[in-house]
Length: 224
Image (cartoon, rainbow, N blue to C red):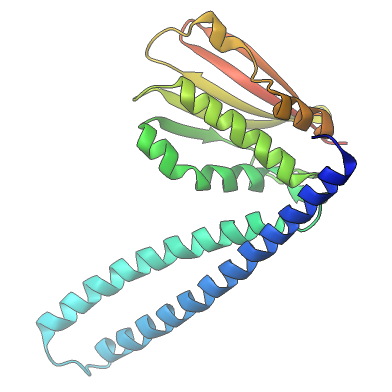
């Protein structure tokens, strides 16, 4: 699976997938613009007194408020999806690591909600750019994020942190359980595909037992 021709084909497949997603999000934005235009027109009718029925006006205003909330949610979804799609444009690109983490956490909101785990984050409030493979780093973060969720139960917590340390960008996944962790949970997930991603991005992963009921997965990404 490490054949150069296979890797080139995979990169091309990712590029095409990114183009499809990008085109799709642009179409979603077009539909969203039409919805916003219609909402604005209806709001104008209400404010200009074109609708005489006061009870109907109140009902329409409630509907418009709900539509505004949903439209904002869709707008945020398309923004993240479009950003995600463009990360596949080239095998290597310069991008902000904080944006990548925020994007991934946004996509996994539903998974966290279904798992009934408390998710917290404490991320750097400044940009940290890196030139690397966005697709591989996204994959790494996603795999370890899912690994962390699989180790947690309902009402446990997961805290995502980031910090710049020397020439590395550290992403921490701090797992806090209601019960103690078994010793086997302290080992990094190093399947063949993960090991390959780590090697290709010069990234390292460590696991450290913090207390009897918590431990941290740390992903160290070199900044160059």
